[in-house]
Image (cartoon, rainbow, N blue to C red):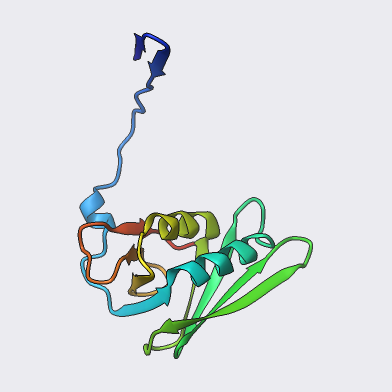
Length: 144
């Protein structure tokens, strides 16, 4: 489909396929929640992204009592590891994400503090401003 207006041409292509039911992608319940200061977390992600694999962009989050360790590797055997303080008292857990997807979601949240809602390393992660259920960002994990 193509629409042309003065000084603008808009072209759209219909993709034939089945898209997942978004209600099934958004986790209904989350057993683990953590809060982190948005600006320092985003800066930490940007530094770790430099040494992530250029193709997969994967980073690993290690969650522990009050601390998140962010680790990135690349094929040249280079590694980045940074720690950021979090408000979390759940069980230790490791989960991987595409650093670009997490960074974009964090950048879209306009608050000093953000909240991650998780269940396990294989389930989707929900990012939001604490207490705000109107704007939700869902990021699927990666196996690293």
